[in-house]
Image (cartoon, rainbow, N blue to C red; front, side):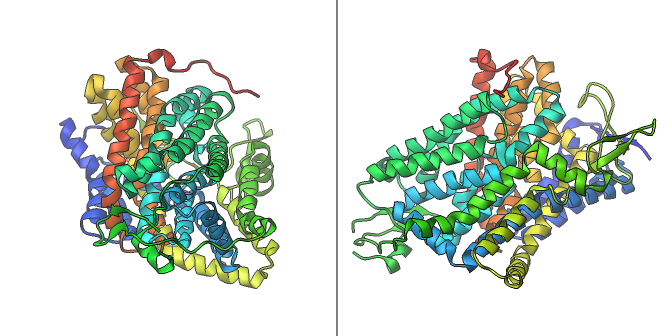
Length: 589
């Protein structure tokens, strides 16, 4: 069975675009407007996409069902497994009492809530994004902030905003790898270009985070710390992405920003300590003030009271032991990201890793199987591609070399090193699984929705609408990446969906394809805070399932505003500074 995608089934481009946008409208309307639980939103949107694909775009039902199943399978192993394992490690840390010590060690650096947000949500969250990605930083850093005393809503919303600038190099550079693969452009040039766009936002986002919490005057009180966080992160992000590689960009930027900020706060303190009004229960009488309103009927507001309860101090060895699980996590994820390690694991554990050629000779090949009824059965046509191209669909069941498996083993090793018995580890994992079950369903169905959208051509119809913006395409092409992430929940998936289209369209309009493919990834990061997958993970990790619509409405305009800033930066590169677009760069070996 074979089928060629159709990009204007209604015969009128804007009508076809509205039809293709229906799954997104269903998703966002149910989530934000009707406050339906995210897993039901994802199920409804995926069902809508399947109906449109089969009834309007005339995609054979068998292919539509296969594409949906392919997306669900991908979501479970590639994304949900990572998030589940990362939250499991966090739960072990809590169960053993080490998380309390971690919390006190951060509180000991600074009691100011503005600075704690910078350290945890931005710096530490960026490190976790670089190591694991796919929602793990929102889950872990969000839970961390609750442990510090932040209300769940505040922890979820602030972490969603913070998890933006690092996303393009998340999970050991996976989005950049995918972008290079689908666009056929040099990975070093793409990474460098993204590294010339996002460092600007890496300076803006820390300021944005604090301003979201407090007034302008209270934001300026900690401006020196904001600049240290933003500039140290941005500089490392630029240097590593342009001159080293695309794998460790966020990990190195996160580490450098954490160290620079801790050292800076050792010598500099804000004149006033800013705390929330609900901190009074653990506070003694100090002049503390500030406000941050949300739409939950409460206020993010700190009233005047004196002092705060000083955090308990622990010996350095005790603090190091408390942070040990995350050190082990970093070690495992970095090791799992090494090509030689991944290759060895795949050869030993992945059944379909060996390919038998026509002449009978055996050679190593891409791990996985051709997905039933889907692999090369669907053809993309012009103008999305220059010539008819069959869409591959290979499922690499790399159960051991998957990043989530590395995270899971890190959790097991950490638990054993902390003296947790195997039986207790099993009980903790079961509780984690039960708590995250709805999030995993939502993630899986969101990926099912994304894959139906991709293989049916709905994504191409939406993308082609953006190409009609003419000289404004650099701005709106950036939002094409935003749309991809908002739809799929993954910058990697967005790059896979629109990377090729960005290259073709930019070449037709006379715009540098390196710039626009990089803009797809850079713009996509700002859509991360509004995708249902991230919001579901945030509410599950902070134990406030049911507030997804409220959180979505709160972060939506932040997402649009930050996405617009990226769009303006891309416009400047396209028409004012085109000579800064890199070509022919090579990473230092």
